[in-house]
Amino acid sequence: MIYQILRRNKNTSKSNKPETLPPPDIVFAKDIVPTDHPGVTDHVEAFTRQVCEVIIGKNQAVKLSVACLLARGHLLIEDIPGVGKTTLAQALARSLALAFQRIQFTSDLLPADILGNSIFDRAEQRFVFHRGPLFSQVVLIDEINRATAKTQSALLEAMEEHRISVDGITYDLPEPFFVVATQNPQHAVGTFPLPESQLDRFLMRIELGVPDRTSERAMLLGMDRREMLKELKPVMSLRTLIEIQDNVRKVHASPAFLDYLQDLLDASRQRHVTGLSPRAGLALLHASQAWALMHGREMLLPEDIQAVGVAVMAHRLGHDLEQSGQSGRTLADNLLHSVPVP
Figure 1 (cartoon, rainbow, N blue to C red):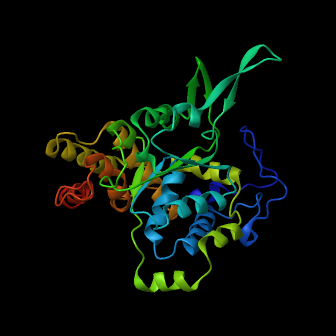
Figure 2: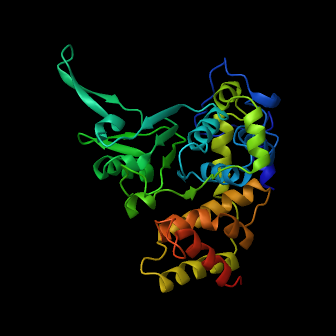
């Protein structure tokens, strides 16, 4: 069973992968320590529960965010200002004790401002590369669509290959590397639309929306979200997170499941001028594997695609969420309801 993959007996030989443990001063929440692996669902539930305590009333959006992280994807959050997009990204990073950087995108931002720059060192008589804020495990890109296409393009190699190239030299980015980008609606003042190549590198796009009345009342009467973020403690170690990510790809996909996935891809290409790409097919598969693993299953079901399908397909099928009847969300939902399950 998958649950047992993460268990490790003292007499079992260790993995050949280098182990990266958190600093000794980190205190783990809920009595979960780095050397204890009670199971995938225990860790994921603790992780999700803690983030939901900060982002109240948005359990489904939080679960999709966790699935995106476990699938080694990147997350795009599109919504109006003030609904908790930045808070969600910070809660995800703090709950895992990962290195976190926030980059505020503006119209005058340059690629070197995020990748880094080579500065001449007089003592050594050579140029020395100084790494930019992109060299972090969780990178929050706030208002990504306020930067120009030149700056946005600096993310393409990093998000796809987890490395960057500067002055002919390639630098690897840390593991894990998780980009959480927020963007304002396309009609907002001072925004630039994201090109298809940039959108396709996000595994999922989600919306938070305003909370329901009960959740909003709890938020109004509760602790300030910034204070709550300071109180968050990690619920799993970096080693455990990487092990879970490794096991996501081991979730079994049956031939019937793959037939259903390919039927969705074929239907999108027949109905729309720009259908889903092969990379979108891989995104659907990996997101579904993460969703199944989160729910304690070692094989995929059609319900897994249906749970993550809209978040994975919507931004690849349509950009304008305000266009009645033709939004990406509507097109993705129509695909899921019209393609029969084998």
